[in-house]
Image (tube, rainbow, N blue to C red; front, top):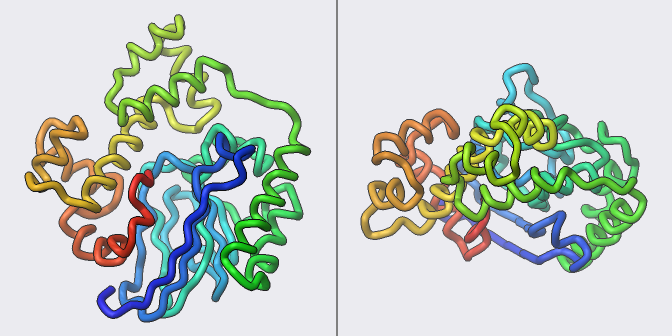
Length: 282
């Protein structure tokens, strides 16, 4: 990524949306050299809208899906990388959506999206499909973020009242709080359910079973630490994130990212280190 010109804009959504969306991230890049970007597993459902050419998805996290082109898409929780072609010049807006807020904002459940990527045009609400054109024509990042607030606030107001079971909401927040290291048996015991019933109810809402969800959250925490690699290197990251050792960390990265941590650092980190845009992102 050396020599690439980068322009970032980051903003929290309207306060009424804070429980549903963590951040809006606007980006514009000129001189991108990395041809394929790895969309890593994350604690967020990801919504991306291109302000330039359509996004070319080369490899989907779910093996049943074929490559696709779209101006905007939403990707559910997943346990493998989404491979995205990168043009030399690209721009877009990235939304970090809570899986607990997906049904309210998008009209589909997090479990329906799990392991899949959907074109915004395939979602049940026309105002979401119209977002790419509206954002492309907006004159500034501030105006684009205002449009997102307006559309998402309208979606939240019109959505049928729905809350995932309180036990599932609590368990998901505990997994996030513990960085993915909390035992599933403890979570089930805390909510008073059998492990089997707990896992079924959790997966019904989020798509991933609690053990898989914890695995993804722990992976995301490791990715965050790798962006500002500590003095102890990969061994320290493994220890802090609850892996058995560095080899365990590396094996998890091969499984979830399709590459080793060292390969990801060499390919992606020069780009991600610009500014503090991704600090704290899952």
